[in-house]
View (cartoon, rainbow, N blue to C red):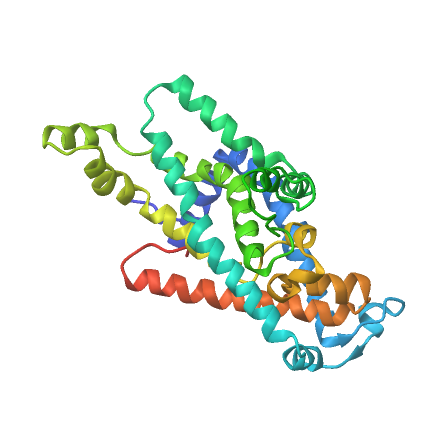
Length: 314
């Protein structure tokens, strides 16, 4: 006669999961540095958004600062230059989305077609290097090349019989310069994710396509791009979460009094109001406003992706 089990089925299942987890404890230990990073530098700082609903006093701290509710958000929307800043941020972000976002994909597809490994590795190393150059150096190179006085490009223009072009102080050229700098500096680095995705494509698919008579363009269109479609979509959704983020350092270094109309974005506005003006609660409200817009964009894009049968981010 069988003895009755002393443990219920849920208890047995928990015991099995506990033993399985302990068996893979090395993998969980490897998660600790990443988990600590997000806890300390991503989740813990969220506590600071409380001051966006307060009239924050550095001497009194969060607990002794006066609660003002949505006053700072109302002030932001009533600010005379709000729509100018909002428009500039959106336009720059959309230009980066249209011209910068596809570049890592295109470069990754081109590198994937290179068969000589030594040549491929050399090209990869060259296009990765600009990522490690600071924006200060990039801005210096830009001024050296495009400056009106002594700029290399304008020297050639003058010697060719033309007039110097105000690349650095012109509203018409400002956004082009920002997007071009971003492409030159970060496009190569952005190929890493897509090259990793391409490495997982089964080579037998290409062999079967060759047997069927498909040329290189057909292989890219029918095999390579569908293989990395989910990766492209995930990166696009994550990029939409930063729709109002354009980076402070690059914009600040290239911005001048003559380009404020097209170059003043949320980051430079927060710098003036927060760090220079000391209005910490107000600028925290600006940051929270940007984060909420980004969250809405991510949720909406993810739902749209799910509706079309894609995996999405979550």
